[in-house]
Image (cartoon, protein in one colour):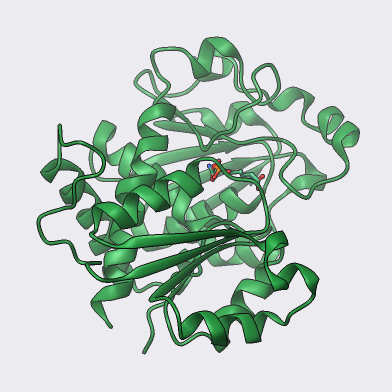
Length: 305
Ligand code: CP
Ligand code: NVA
């Protein structure tokens, strides 16, 4: 069986835990090393990763490129608009062709269904690098960051404030698998997809009041109010007016609570300068951890090959 990494809820809990443990171990083992030096075991030696981007990216693009190099492999990066995909070549045909040329494919796509179709036709592992529906690589890095700061995530309470979006969905998927609780505070019109909420079960509590969500939370998380592909900018700004993570909101959380944001951030909208640049913010560790988490994902995908 080809090991695709499409969504957190499709993993066995033991696989998810082993990916997270590997990320922690790989990070610790190369402390102080230059970024281009390969890990001692180099599990992607002789392997090539293709990366396809239908949407903009800074962190995902650079962290996956750094990750495959640190595993001993190489990357080929393309914007979908420069490929025949952009002129209507079917997703399935692209997957069949790339399966003959590379050892794994990472895709950032507008439509989640396109990534599913790509994986169906691919004979090499396919990794979801963000879709309209989910962002599983991001929340792996977030959980690595939380565990570095606070210890094992099981039993912790996390608060998601703002849009019930792709990143929120992936946190929902992870909650029952890892045994943490997720309070989600969002306006009624911007709640998470009901299918995704159902996957969270009793591990997720939905509210419209950010203050209810953060009380007792050890982790406070937010994201942009306007994701790539969203068009209703003005309506969103109005709907999310009371969902900004500011100091007053952080003060209602656990006294040792940390702040996460997947970035890019919009200071003055979903988060204030004082919070994102303040002592509880771990957003730069979170961004770095994209490399370590994705190395563990790639190593897991290749382990079955
Ligand atoms: N957080 C994240 O995925 O960032 P990019 O859009 O820059 O890749
Ligand atoms: N929710 C955001 C995440 C960006 C990394 C988006 O999809 O644009």
